[in-house]
Image (cartoon, rainbow, N blue to C red):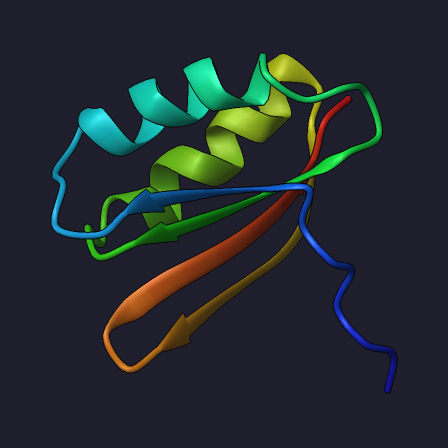
Length: 79
C-alpha cells in the first residue's frame, strides 16, 4: 500500500459547519500552486458531500477522504 502524499498546506475546519469549511477551503486553495496538496480536517458531515462536489466543479483532484475518530480528513491536489 502506498503512503499518502504530504500536504503542502493544512486547513483545520474542525468545529465549523456548512458553509464555512468549503468557503475556507476555497480561500486556502488559492494560497497553493497547481499540483500542490491541501489537507482539510473537518467535523461537519456535510463535507462528505460538499468537498467532492467542490473538487469536481473546480477541477481539483480529491486524492483521499477518510473518517478518523469523528473527523473527516481530505487530501486535495490543486488542479
